[in-house]
Amino acid sequence: MITALELGLIYALVALGVYLTFRILNFPDLTVDGSFTSGAATAAVLIVNGTDPFLASAAAFVVGALAGLITGLLHTKGNINGLLAGILTMIGLYSINLRIMGGANIPLLGEDTLISGLRDVAGSGWTSVLVLVAMALVFKLIIDWFLHTDSGLALQATGDNEQMITSFAVSTDRMKIIGLMISNGLVGLGGAIVAQFQGFADIGMGIGLILVGLASVIVGQAIFGTRVVMQATLAVVLGAVVYRLAIQFALNVGLNPNDMKLMSAVLVVAALLLPQWKGFQRIAQWRKNRTALDAAGDATLTSEAKTHGEKVR
Image (cartoon, rainbow, N blue to C red; front, side, top):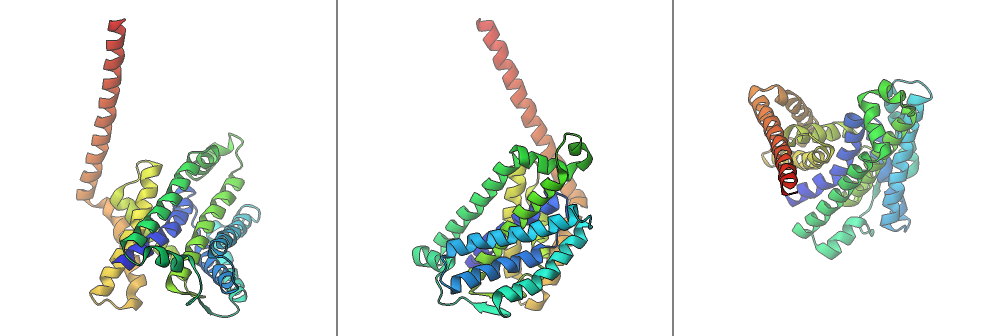
């Protein structure tokens, strides 16, 4: 269970990256399958050659961001469909990743990594889980902060109503490129940490990653809600953990590991169908009514306080 929690918290970085493109930008980005491996490959090569694992992980973020930049330029400047632009970048990255790694696999056993350092300090129990919780929350809060800045609000508006935000002289092309770079940077960083966690980087480790990211986002938001940005990003982090726990449970009951992608697809379908279930709709309506009542109560208290203040005067 601890291993599943740790992996879920690491994959929360990937889920946050997918959330930025899939939910915020409304952009179907398949680059992540390639940028994840690019981040892992970059970090692994640098670590094997003696680079500090923190710097290697930072380099993985940069490489992932560059992959997002390529997709963004293909889409915005090349006028290529977003889905196709991501596919083209992903395919190109396969060969680039092989070049970076010099082969199909790089072992990291015995190397100094972020995870080995964590194990030396915190062991492999709940303390290490708490450290990874803190890491996931830090990145979640950074995303929350960014989405409340002027650039972040413009990014959200680009995904919601591109024509409207264009009328305010905001470059939607620039917003898309920024969003794709941040998203794939997070995915690349996630790939670097996953490689250090499992002790190797492999050319096929990013295959189907978009499904993992979507499962985390959709399952998390279906269960925990998306009322405001801070709640939505927390739901994404928790969704990544829930997804990993579900995978671990499936393995424990004897499900074939080769069926994990099928299970991921089933989870996504279930999460998409869940909001259409009448029982879920009643719960959602109850939440909505409760939120409205809380807001009305706060407004009433504020009004009464103002009235009382005027009487005292």
